Amino acid sequence: MKVSDRHEKFAHLHASGCFVMPNPWDRGSARMMAAMGAEALATSSAAHAFTLGRPDMGTITRDEALAHAEDIVAATGLPVSGDFENGFGDSPEDVAETVRLAAEAGLSGCGIEDTTFGDPVGAYDFELAVEKIRAGVAAARALGRPFVLTARADGVMNGTYDLQQGILRLQAFEAAGADCLYLPVPPGKAELAQVLAAVRGPVNALAVGALQDMSVSQLAGMGVRRISLGSQVARLAHAAIRDGMAALMKGNLTPFKASAPGSEIDALLQGGRHDG
Image (cartoon, rainbow, N blue to C red; front, side, top):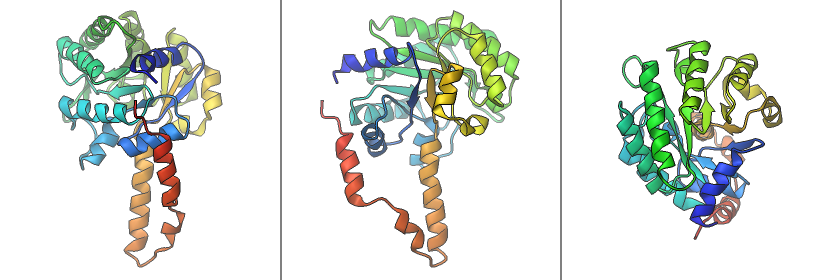
C-alpha cells in the first residue's frame, strides 16, 4: 500500500460502518495484528510506557512518542493513529505542532485528550480544551492530505467531570472540526447511547468496563464507528508474564505449554511485514 493510500483508507474507514483498531506496542505486535486481519492500528501511550518500564499517564515525551509511532508505521502497510495524550503541551500551539510532527512521522491521524497530568490528574478548562482541538484541526487541514483528528473527553474516565460535561465537550470539539469523537469508559451501554445521540460525527468506543461485555456487532449496531482496545492487548501479554512467572517461581512449568509455536509466530511476523 502506498503511503498516500494509507491516509485515504483511514479517512474512508471513518465514513461508514464500524471497524476495530487494535493497539500494538512494538513492530512484532503490529505485524501480528496486521497478519491477523487488522485494517488500522493505533499506538497506546500506556502500552508504550510499559515497554520502557514506566507507568501510564504522562510519562512519555513527545519525541519518544513520535519515534515510537514511526516504528509502528514502518512495521506494516496499515494506517496508524497516534495516542498523543494532551498534545504534549498546555497551549493550542503545542497541539498544532504535535499534529504537524505526527504527520511527518507518517501517521494517518492522532488523538488529543483534555487531561492535565499532575497529582491528581485534572482536566483543562472547557474553553482551553476546545481551543486546543481547534488548533489541532487547523494544523491537520493545512497538511493537504487526510489526517483524522480524534478529540477525547477523558474526564469521565478520570473522575474529573460527569457525563453531561463530557458530552458538552464532545459537542464543542465537533463544532471545532474534530473528525472523530471519543469519551473513554462511559459507565455503561445507556451512557454510550447518550454520547452517540449527542453528536453527528464518528464515535470511537473503548472496549473496556461495561462495554467489554458487548460484541463488535452490538457496538456497531448502536452506531459506534470505531472500536479501540487501548492497552488491553499489551496488558493481556503482561498478564501472561505475571501468571507464567508466578507458576514458575513455585516450580510449575505447565502454563508454558499454552505458548504459541515459534513457527506460527514466525509466519505471522512475515505475513504482517511491510517492505514498501
